[in-house]
Length: 381
Ligand code: COA
Image (cartoon, rainbow, N blue to C red; front, side, top):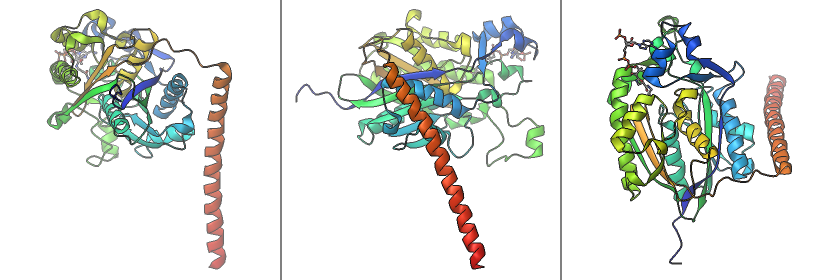
């Protein structure tokens, strides 16, 4: 079997979801002391999406995940691992990944959240890919999703203009074909943790009236220092990951950077010498969606036909932690993929309804069991 390739994790599905509510720079300029020009010139952002009151990180994850499973034509009951990268989970616990697992009816899947600021998704992708290569799983659903609008201080012009909500998802599957995830680089420097954080709500400052009064449950950031860190670390991680994959920066066919600030992207791209037409950005329309930024951008790039079989795609991210991550992927699917037949889409929708009924049934059964036990204990007393 001299020609057999090593087992690798290949991207076989992708999906994204952005809330319909658009918040423009003009609207923001009426909320805080800023201007459309300032936001556009200093960040490259024109508008961002804001989740509706009925939307959460889990509900947006679910929509992106279903789209990704449709593309991969993977039955949710066969999904083996679900990772949700997020800093805005629905709850501290249970994990958002478990909520998604339940809603998908992914009864064979393990599920956990991964929190590492804006680098969370690339970290999650790397973990999932390595578990697949190791033979532990044959597939994984990796999601990046955020409802940052719920932790933004809408009176702080330093931060509120930067962020947005959304979700992106990829399906990874084991395969011995050429390509897939070639290499990943993960890095951290916790000494910079104070530069970008949510000060309260953890074990250091649990929620109190004071923490609420002092607006400690919102994002706090030293923008200038984060900027400096980002422009240094993004080119470094990109060079490292390409080298680890045994390739050169010139080989990159598509660079998908974390969508934080147009000036950071420009600076990194210039330092790396990547031609602008090989860089994908959608920052202007979505702002910084943290863990969702890379999967949303990659999915949009794929949908636009920006990747071809054999292309080297590199994703690089940075953020709170401080942490950074990069991954090099050799694209292995011919594109575009055919849409699944209507009857399969219909069947999939039925499965999701069934999952909802099964979840309701299990909850009711558990409640009835607890009630019955209480009654029995009452009788014994
Ligand atoms: N509108 C108008 N003025 C603003 C403003 C806004 N929305 N936000 C900040 N300013 C002001 C500042 O108060 C400052 O005023 P001062 O000089 O009177 O103190 C001035 O603009 C310049 O601030 P500075 O921080 O130097 O601006 P900048 O050009 O670096 O841009 C950021 C600020 C936040 C856009 C930029 O630092 C940045 O993008 N940093 C990285 C943030 C990031 O990516 N975070 C997420 C990481 S995942």
